[in-house]
Length: 276
Image (cartoon, rainbow, N blue to C red):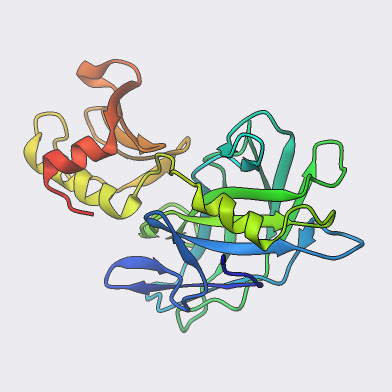
């Protein structure tokens, strides 16, 4: 059975990484963690604000953010698969007075504020408001919906990444107001998840370090990673940038000319000897 309830999505800064699900309230979804968030109620079955984010152990202050690293997906019982297009539901996340929307056609790579870190290096229990509805404002279809996120931290000014992005994790939403999508159906939908390419940020910085050490004629000095137009990237004094997005490696500038896709991250992890 899938985990049910209103989870505490706990995370912590430990040994140079943001670790997700330190309270063990998620479940495995392939190589990733998924938190299950049910919509229930007769008046607003598509709105929920009981689940919480909470972070501890951060040592430099600053602010915490999330970034969508996939589009919104919807389970199709008829096709027995997760759809990435062909539906008009959209998910809104309201947190720290900022609302971000994700759907099948927009929102991937957009970012939102989780909250500010206290002097003790923690956050309060932060309760985002999740709302799922169709574009015309009507209630979504009963069923399951899925989206992947990552968490990262910056200086208060936002100009420096203090806490590199976490390994991506998923939020799974489901509703059964019509009585046709019970917990067994929800568990079946997650069991059929076959995975999508996601950027594993915990290994991207070591990959960038490897590229700087082995290809100094192209990447001539250490550079700081940052988010640029949805890419996690490093840029150099020779106007070359190296970046990753949606599980692939890109460059731009210098001998590469414009934006160049060099293929999946996994092949570069293997080449650099960077283990899972």
